[in-house]
Length: 239
Image 1 (cartoon, rainbow, N blue to C red):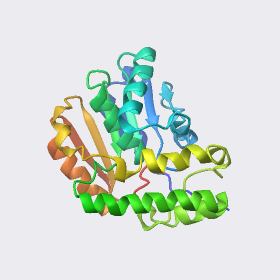
Image 2: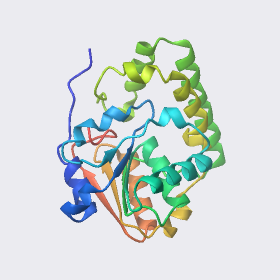
Image 3: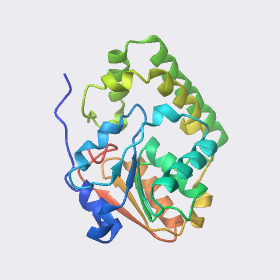
Image 4: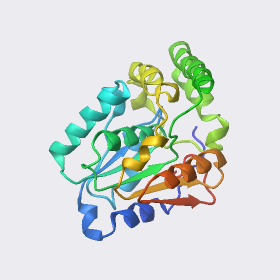
């Protein structure tokens, strides 16, 4: 059975603060889930965010750049001034979407996201790690894989809600995502962040020291951003 969830009540407050007015909450907020995640991870936001859109990312796995342009095209057709929210892998995808269409989004919230590895050797190491996760998912039972995945130190013992039975149906998409959307496949986006002028709220957990440092560097490179640290949270800040 899943362990009790540690829900952070300040998530909606952070979302509301960057949207700047209650009226803006009627606009579409596009929330991108994390690796091995599920659109239902964001369900706790639905009562207060009626315009919430939660794409199933496993149905549209592609290389970063083609995905970003296709996603931006889909969003633009639905709402000309949306707000983008992304957690972890979803945060990295969100950054690619913002860079692909910097005039599209009204604002963005990035949670526990990596801007990319500049060091070539570190990227090679990460590629081996991503490939190892894909092999585990191919060979292990879903339950065993989830247990190993959630036991990573970065998650600080916090499990995501639900049993992930729906996510299991998209196993092949998740396997492909370790290749297409793994950190090893991402370029270092830090030098490009200065091109984004929209307001961005970058959120990290106080216990997640690595991603808090990454957030500080990212916000320093962004012209219109704020970094909020949630003291009692780890990597999975909203949960």
